[in-house]
Image (cartoon, one colour):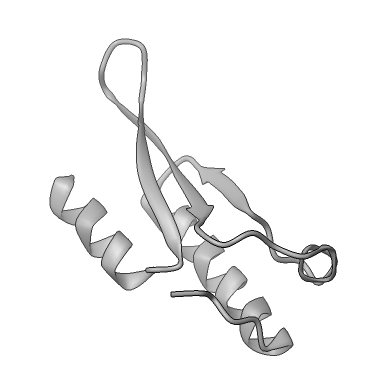
Length: 79
């Protein structure tokens, strides 16, 4: 899991990606949080400051959606 987390953070440098731990210590879902704040216009276009997903596939899919929106509005990631 640690290698997967390192790879995700290297692949998506504009995001801080973390793995949630359940109360019992077992791995839970995933969180992605942008390093750079968003303007109201960027939020209105569909960019989000953070999100959670239950598995890594869903996380990467949402990151791809966010990348596509960012590309369409020419958002500068700050990375």
